[in-house]
Image (cartoon, rainbow, N blue to C red; front, side, top):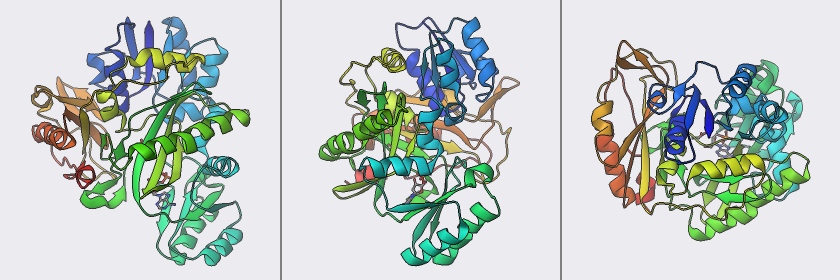
Length: 423
Ligand code: AMP
Ligand code: GLY
């Protein structure tokens, strides 16, 4: 088989790494890829949102399966275009990707199908939103309806902060089209977890549990990022909760999407807030998590390719994935200043030394090749993933690997995985 992976981050490097282990694969292409991916696949310089060029490429290279990493091409309709042209593609079409692309859409679906989520209301009108905020009181959460690069969620501690957020989104247009409506919702407390399931639109195949670390600093301090580290399995998701998440969230979501005439096919990402025996859905994403994909794929024993292909073709008939017993932990190494502005082009040293450690793999995210050196080219630069028999040993592996790597301004969290050890 010829496979095309769309994207160029740590998630896509992990996908390519796992796909490359499949005996079914002859050739892997990745657009646009990165220097780490280039060691395993032929990288092609096509941007993830250039749907027409990706389509032409897939046709010309007789690609058997296209695997879409990030949300942007999905919300632009890459899957619609490929399917209409008779090409197998892993990822939801544009209508189904609204689960991530519109908070209002996803909240309405959850309400209609009794999927547990925070109480909320949607508004396009500023005054109505303000009235609701005054009636509910603070703390309260204000979210731009559309995709806002992870910055569209405001956790307001006071009514004034919430109203300011509404003004910025609805009146001043801070997020452009993504802010034509807002969702105002109940503030939830607890511990977050990420839950993933493969689906062909009808059948589901849940993955192992995992947990991300969203804030930039240790102890969950500072602004949110794309994710500073992740691990699997996540003990906050007990076996009993795991089963309930499957039956009370994942299956009704997939059934609801089908009943609405927008069947969802690909990987469903459910962001959860867990508080003891209770859980509520924070959000859906229409794609694999990054960095969660890195530890999860390092633990997956099953061949990934037949699963992706079965989802793409609407014929998923595998009932369980096989996993290595080991735990895996990914520590993200980020550029200084991230998630604010950061410099690029700093020379990275030590990647080979980290990769030489048994049970450590370095996935590239924001890197570039320059005069035989690897330099920084993004906010999240590398993901160092370690695996071992226990979470504690996997944490040690990942940090031993991370300690080999350095560049000017590099930052990382020092407490990835500690929440698991507290349980
Ligand atoms: P979202 O993009 O909706 O997942 O929101 C981004 C982050 O904001 C989440 O990962 C949570 O950390 C936080 N968050 C979102 N909604 C709520 C809520 N209702 N209560 C508390 N925190 C929230
Ligand atoms: N790590 C969270 C995400 O991929 O959105």
